[in-house]
Length: 151
Image 1 (spheres, one colour):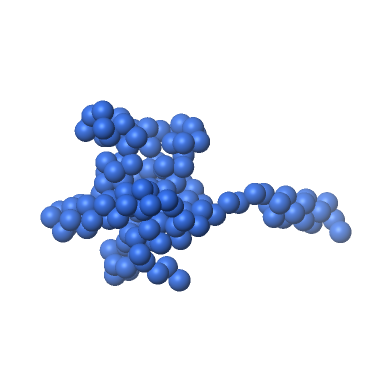
Image 2 (tube, rainbow, N blue to C red):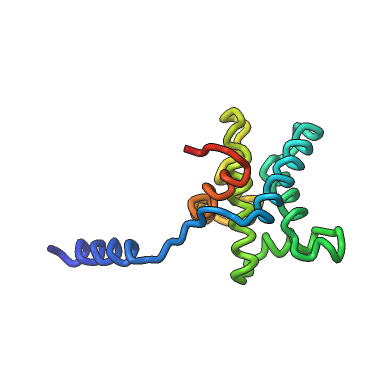
């Protein structure tokens, strides 16, 4: 075995050993937030059919998942935090949940109206591979919260 094949084999072993946790369900409070966010998303999309649906998912998700929502109704700061390069664990989990929400909420739509991975990544200022990771991690749980069959 040559040196390149050995390095490739080692990378495969390291990748397989990485801990990848998939969230299988949310508590009742989080499920209710996702349901309310979905209703708001559909209502907004009906009223504004030309609006970027990925951006709508970000706006609606930020409105429903902002931990400071009780203090003030301005969500601009929270949206900026979601789009920032900040890797704080709590913020990153909310960002991943909203990315999965943006993807899952559009899966029942016709293909041309679905939120693309690239589009979601653009709105959150992340790479589409980050969106794939978020959907794999939280997609099933978000789908279950919304009462959708994903498979």
